[in-house]
Image 1: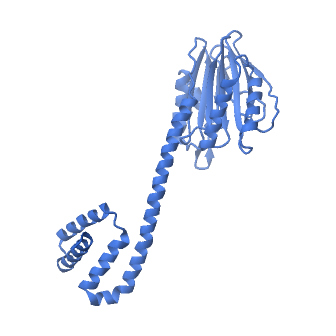
Image 2: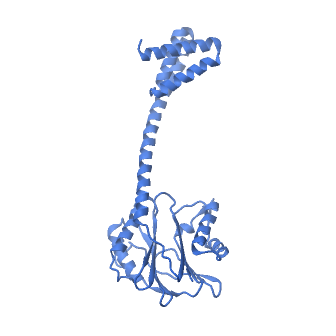
Image 3: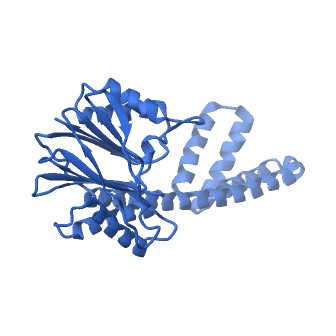
Length: 333
């Protein structure tokens, strides 16, 4: 008697014993048999066939009455088994995809890594949290030899791997520009040319680029359709939207971007953000900029890094994050 025949014989005896005694110990043996069947990759329909065959041999009269119903059960188990196999295949593929995305996310973090400057004249805080594994937001700091600090903040209109690839392209393009190209309008003009030529026509990028000069304590900046930032004037304890105007990167081949200036006095702040900061949701309500200001006002006594962390913590607990969340605070010391 081979293994398959012994398995059927064992199952039939267990079924007979349980039908006669209703003994719980018999169920214990049945559980062991089930474990054996699973380890040997037995399909559900195989177990049902074994059960039907045992019924036919043990209780032929009952089998004759119940045969149509038993056949119905068998057909159901056949489809069930096929569905299980399909599910396992999809589950395996999904795991492979998840592992590849996790690897791609780690590579992206390495490619887009930047150092937040530590200076005696600016207190800088940054937080950037992707909605999914891949980040469609990008920020970058550049410390110039002319005592300036450059800051770039970009947001791809889209999510996932395509958005992440766009961000990597922006970083590579910026690194390839000559060091003497420091004008915000010129930076955006060149990036627009890169994006328009290399990115799908359905994908656009918003970007804010600024340089702060320690010599004249002035922030010069330009925007390519980016979410308006905020300026905090310490002298009057008031917040103002940063004036910006400019077309998204990639819309037209030739675009000129205007330059703006903002002088900073002691304790003044520049607050930059992506639209994910104001697009967190709770049911059908979007978070408003007014609520963002409330949290910042309550945190003014903290460092810039603590402020951005307080803001994220506040909204993480109260809203559903729908988009990548990036917030930058720069305060004049």
